[in-house]
Image 1 (cartoon, rainbow, N blue to C red):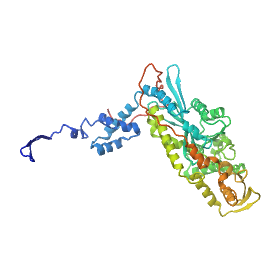
Image 2: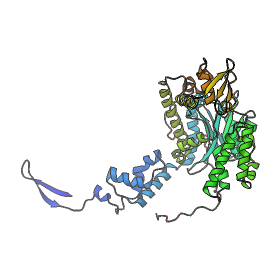
Image 3: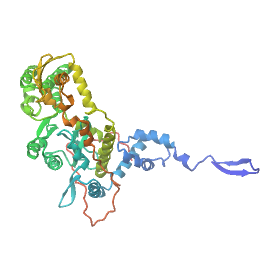
Length: 492
């Protein structure tokens, strides 16, 4: 430290005294100095943890060194992140009060949005929350009447689950429709969620739901949506089968999964019967028990009576859960608003992108048509009537353009022209695009994103008035089983 500077010429200075001890910033920037502790780290990274709840201590160590020259140990960084999260998740009574205010602001800025807060009337404690934005409600009317249902757990102070209903737009993109915050994924909460979802979706369209075999969905869907169809997620069923085959060798297990998929994809009853016989032969003990409680109309194409448009799994909602992975750590109001911002940004981005599309149908569906034509371009086509053709493939099939059917049944199952139909239509004077479902048209896609989610001015905590109706946080339930022990925990 420079203690004294003495000047005896205009441009000349001399050092009279040197003090090696520095009492300012440099002393703090040492790993052993107590002032470089977790409190300081918490203050520095609090905003960052609020934006990114999954911030890792090791990233904090590197960034503090890079940005401030501050050296901290992993332990100090870990404690700092923990304290920052504790401050972020504090005051949940105000947070749930804030949720009521936030919901009113959402409806005010986005008229037509559907919001429901379910509270215990005796003690005003939060129970459940449902929200669907007006832009999502209107946009879904231009998507296929197909919804993927699933739930994922939350990681905030009060845990809970997030239930979601997700669709796909005409270009196979993720299209969130509604979400809900509940305490657990059970029959009562699924029934409550579907009851409010019925107020959001168009009742004049026959819906198809794709989900796992949760008991709540099996019981609630037929009651709330009596005309809808329910398809089981094929990936979920495969995981169940794989679990039953966990003690067999890998090659045998892979072969069994392949045969099960063949049963699910079989388009006709005859082909399904043949696939099931082969499946049974390979697993005489496991297969009968596995298929015993698995009704065919829920998973096999040959027996499914709804329109699942070739969607065999609920990967859309799985992608949604991954999309909101970091927001699951946030308090409830910030969680909902973070999802709103994500959907708002995605809708605006896709709306702008679609304006430059030159084709009649969406690019991914156009590519599917090209692939279908290239697959059968060597096939010969014989015309029977104006709308009926025979395609000499292996084996030969009949295509009826007027009825939009093919004897391979893939056109009927997928709701999109198969390779036989594409080749037959290309060899006629008919317009191929006229036979593509309206959901895949570029105009339908643009209509899906015609409406915007309006910004919310702020989600900061409003002025708290104890005379107002206050929503208290839910009662924390002790999770099942013995709590996990923390190993090698650091002392405070």
